[in-house]
Length: 465
Image (tube, rainbow, N blue to C red; front, side, top):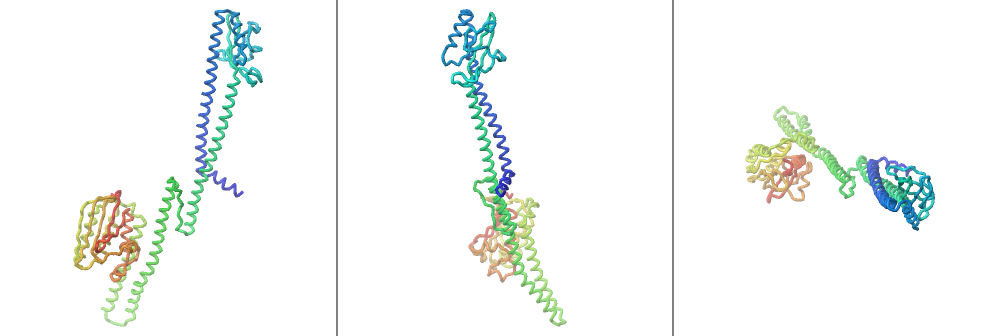
């Protein structure tokens, strides 16, 4: 019973049904081809025999016209007397008396078109003592004498029989091989689909590390497996990010919330009539609440960008306008800190994107550069056009402390801050948001050494325009 169930399940699979469909078409095609071969071969031999008989009839008619009945009788006797001949002759009087020939009597068969007839000579006989049939033509000579000329068809009948048997075997082997191939095809496809099902069951059970195996042939199932694995990578990345965000939020927001509560509690404990004390506490509370709100806003922006919800609203965006707006906003901030902000717009590229998120990403890069560049430093905001493997590139470079090469991947994670940056305000979400916005626009985020300082580039692919 256990062996029957997989077989029944296999017979109900789509690959097996498709294999049966193609098998049916193939069998029909083979049947037509075999039928044409049979008709061509047997028909050609029959036509050749008919042509030979027609030549003999013409010769005997000439003999009758030139030598009369006696000459015709002698000629028929001579020809029918040859040993091992497969020719059939019979000459009779109007009353049916046999004058010459090698048949014992006129065949009991009805002549077809042109006087041709097929009849059985004997159950056994002929050249090789096989069941004999004949094909002959009969006609009436002047004086009502009847002449029949034909050929023993036992060899052709045997050839036809062998051809029919061979064609049946070919047809049967085609069906068997087709069914076997269909079963093997269905079993192979079912095995690979079962592997996909096992992977999905593991994932449904909570194991996000499972991946669909690929056969390496590059066929449709391999492409499906590749797409599923890419989707699973994205799901695992999102789930891992969600866990990290949850843990980071719980860890990083506990301190400011505790500090906020402590300030309010301390203000309540103090018994003073000085309104400035309460004002100072309220101002500190508002600042702390603003930092918390900024953190939540950044998290929401990252989640929105990573979810891809904004893809439907992508529209042509002039990157030069985005860069100019960000430069106008942060140039006074840079001057206030004693920094030089240089804006270099070398092209006017247009990409499909979300203008608000792109502006926020550029603003985050400028904010980070201004925050970590020492006084007297220089920041460059560069927009380039089409280049090898890209349609546009936005680069923010500074001559600050930079980021070590081994930490450049790490700082893209949420709430990650280097030790040197912990003394400055921030929540460790700036570069995470920039990376999420870049991924939403199918762009890549590149962190490079500016010697000294850091150079961050958002590189848009060639088809982003």
